Length: 430
Ligand code: GDP
Ligand code: IMO
Ligand code: MG
Image (cartoon, rainbow, N blue to C red):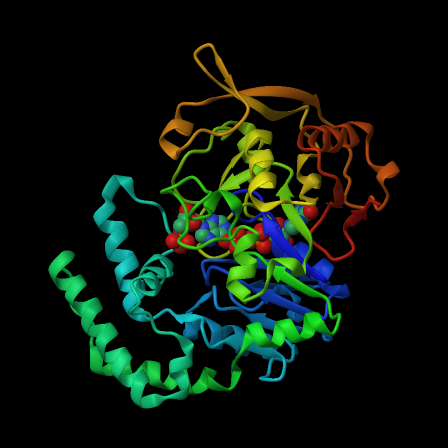
């Protein structure tokens, strides 16, 4: 059955939005399955640059329907703003095009306040979250006191649930973190208003997608974050609170495992990370400046959601092979190869060393990874600008050698090479 899953293989910001936009041309539906507005997916269509946080990147294609699954946590303020901005840009967003699962959970101002308080309380051990209330919203979901969107169809139950939610948040804020309480009465009214505004979009996403797949329609599942931020498989505890890996797509959309056709792993030609946590191949010298850029271009490495400069480093093949394993990646989409133009030497991490020992798989936890020394293979760089390349043969031979090195190490084919942010800036490989 024709479900393709697009998943980030690193710490997020691999260019998932850009690849989803590319693949959405052949899809009937695009569906977000995990995370919330901690995600920032940039899609460039001609002169228009869309920064999407919740709405699937396929929205820019007029023929697609878009879905937000039960695995997502939704801040209604962000959602309503995003719908408005897209409509202003001439993109149609309406309840026959955007469908949001009744089993997705709501993020409130209470979750935002708790995220801030918890990060402050962690002091030097802070995770560097996006402060979007993601962790507290998933905590409420797991604790079985979350605000499921089914509630927006029943105002009586919704008001009671909101009152209990803000009472609980205020107790935590005051007793645990010594913070001022929120104005619960005001917030209950405010969130009732948001609930009314999003009610027309609430649907049974699992049923709709299963029906679509049954009719042979192509569905694209759009991952947020990345494998190394996965709650179970990432560099715990420096992770997000959901499962961005490919199995999360099935769980977060209500689909069965038999639907999956391809798992497309999006991999940036180098590596970045926002927030705290281990990053064995991180660099700090002029190479870092080269990779990060100055901020002058929209693709420079500054967070879409937070504006924070991203930490940058060489591609880590140990972690990439691990990501391929835990996702079952069937093909890779390599992005931002153009950014490596102009470097004399390009390094890739092929193993780690601790003392005399060589490791080719990651250790059991973030604490150990901190002490692992990357072992590099050095490859020659290229000076040519490659953004106009459209065929494999047009790439400089050293760029081809770099791509072949990744394929050989990972034993997975690279099917797409992105050489720029725009739709056409891509080399498709058979
Ligand atoms: P996502 O979170 O995985 O969707 O990635 P982001 O959108 O946060 O970050 C990727 C950035 O790189 C965006 O600004 C994209 O427009 C840009 N981008 C994607 N692919 C390429 C590429 O091949 N070359 C260049 N120069 N920019 C790219
Ligand atoms: P996209 O979809 C990069 C990181 C945060 C922090 C950690 C936990 O654009 O790739 P959270 O707010 O989720 O509790 O923060 O996860 N993080 C991301 N980093 N890209 C993202 O999304 C991210 N979403 C969360 O920086 O380190
Ligand atoms: Mg991003």
